[in-house]
Image 1 (tube, rainbow, N blue to C red):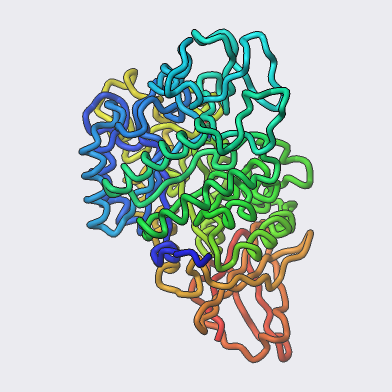
Image 2 (cartoon, helix red, strand yellow):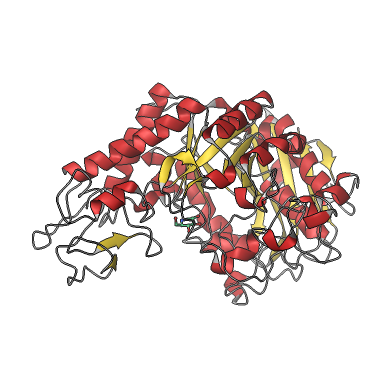
Length: 537
Ligand code: NOJ
């Protein structure tokens, strides 16, 4: 079936906002929706045209809001539904679309559906969650169970933390000896699907432009090929194409080969299930990066390789071309540490040159545009090690880095108090700042067709143990070549023969890059930690 792919996605550059930490408009120490509205001019000046907001709904916040207690009400600490509607409207005036976070796989234990479901007597919600036959039963070990937290004599299956009971989408493979594993077409799973669709319709009608979908691959249990989970999303996509053709669904799935055919417009290249992503961006000192496999490509030692990333990325790109997009991210509220950790300004600029010239849909995590750092903090709202990437946005050097007027001890999380912390105010007027570099790259991405999400991608030069990494993007007769040298040594490469007669128009060359004749061919030279963007004709 032919799917509708909204035009705007081709030009989309997303910005992710963790609402707790963006901007506090009412001095209570926590960010809020009116605060986001107040910062829309800033977002517009950055050039982004879409925003994803982490869950902002009623919740006990045992997992920062990924434990929803009311899907259709904004958490009072962030404001009201009216505020969110105003955000949709104000953002639209600036050509910015707002995408919400949908958590379809589980709720909070405080959700009224769960409160009813856990009761002893049979009621309309009894089968909204997955309950074992008895509290003394242990389910198969691939399922997480919580026992002893319900009136009914049963344990419930969870998706993440204990307080996030899995909604019942059924089991793709059932087991006659365990009848509580209901088939996908049973009444409970079918009702749950309708409920989630209603939630989506509610926010789309109010002006949301779509959803980032939490753990999108996790819905149907015992679904090894994800066939039944995909079937649900395909139905949702067909409904969206007909009813909300401009709306998008963005999967937290991490396997575009499954999620895009299933119906998602975009899927993320993420840390989990993606050694390629780790080998590309994860900073030194984190995870198993010292293993040669995990040296980040963007490391001055030059020990990294782009090949692990390409081995993973190219098949994904080829299989999804023309159908949907892969999202490369600077980071998110789960990925630790922050991308700028331990990296120089030159390296950060190089990373952005890469991220903003690749196909698909780039996502910038708030604060990464100025190189905010990871803070080592005690866990907040189920963040644990992730807490340090969730600290307040650093707007200025005023009180609380300009994030809030509340007393410092009332802040959601402490602000980075380092004397040399990056701030928007400091970088705003510095033409060489990371912030202004990100701005100009976003502008270039928007101006060049070849750099659009669906422009072709071709590797020109990529070799294990050698640099630079060179690729082209092309669309509608326009071709742009990008070359990257993360190492601290000058590197050169002879361009392939088919480019012998090409003309080059250097669009963007940080110091040290040159392209010069070498016999009848061309030789490209890049200085330490630098890159180039060159128009080819
Ligand atoms: C993925 C989210 O990004 C993460 O923050 C959350 O804890 C889990 N899903 C559970 O919803």
